[in-house]
Length: 283
Image (cartoon, rainbow, N blue to C red; front, top):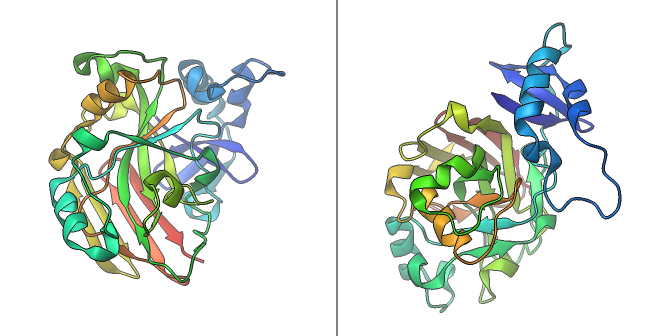
């Protein structure tokens, strides 16, 4: 199933190039009051929402996918977890390009581990990416994103994919400089998710997906998830050896080679096999 959030927090069931408004399916979610849950309610109750969405789709109002404002498919992630330099060729380019490394040591992911991005950086595919520091280089980074669907702690890689609710496209926008990654990648609007959530039952194997990103029609990043240094299952094992992952937590799995600068007025087109495509403006 493909589920999106659109316009004024409506829930949509995506079928081809159309969206069926199945917002009524949200009625199955429990009422929340202070202190609010620390997990995303929709992801926590995804099986019930899917069942209700299928029922609500009958006779539901339809919209063209191209005519709606696409929000992040996850509204309330507890945390955004990200994997640095998780493709060998990107590790090589980061080490050789001084505009990327800024005299920072660029070490292997096995040594530096994962990092966290601020939840306030979350954005949807229809949002404009704001260039916060126009005097510095800001880069695009396309990534496969996994959405955690169940509480996961000390998970073994052979069981890890059972904890994934679904997948989507991610853009990990990065301002270059000497500061820590988490600071430079946590700017408002710099964690783009979209266009929708593809549930894990529709994508059982994330290890052979083509990624492509262009800027103003110019190809920049073309790769396949088979080249990940640490795959999705291993990343979940790695993360949960340090902390618990909860429903709605977002896992950026790393970007391939070809990262490059973006500027106001640019248009980014990004696609991943089975996960659709997004077109994002830079402002």
